Image (cartoon, rainbow, N blue to C red; front, side, top):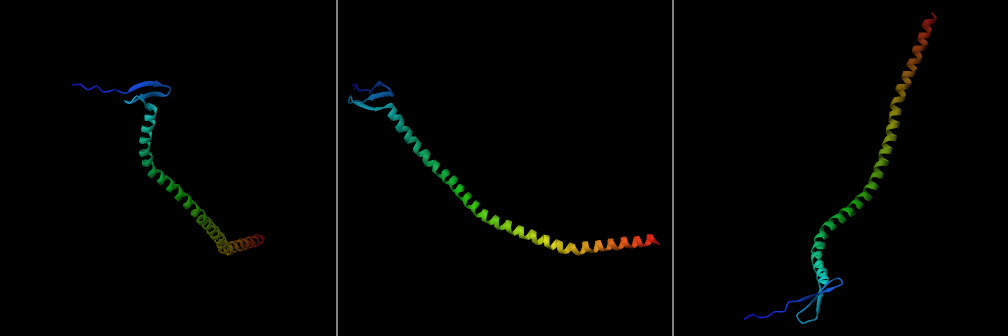
Length: 120
């Protein structure tokens, strides 16, 4: 014996089809069903994106913190290098001054000696 079952009837609507249920009343539209299924599919995707987003934002936060720390550290380093350069300049002048003085005196006395020898 065959039992007759009622199939839902689809009636055209402006934004999809209205499904008329077994009780003869309007059920949800196919657009509503589509929206609900999209929400069901989007939620796991968003949950899967939380971990990479947390990693990216953590890396961004760490980069900003390291940059702030490096700015002060590099400022101190730059000041130390500048002072070291000044000290090196002073030391090189202190070491070179006697050598330059000796060379100039030697050249002066050689020139005088040559001048005296040429006068004879």
